[in-house]
Image (cartoon, rainbow, N blue to C red):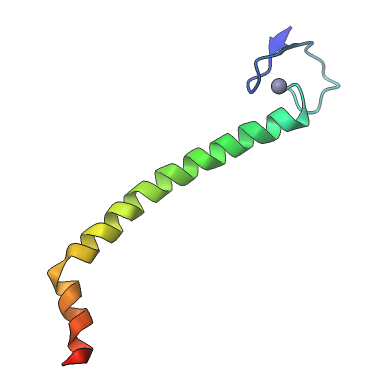
Length: 69
Ligand SMILES: [Zn+2]
């Protein structure tokens, strides 16, 4: 018996199961989705920081004011 990594339900280890070590296609997709969501959060955090620091940069504000003068 093995535990499904997603729902931790005990299941028979079978080479006939194309979704192993998951118990079902649904659990396999949930696990892949969780990885994708984690990747997104790791990628999004530095870019949010980058955006706020360039927004506060006085040089970039000066550059934005220039067409008005
Ligand atoms: Zn499962």
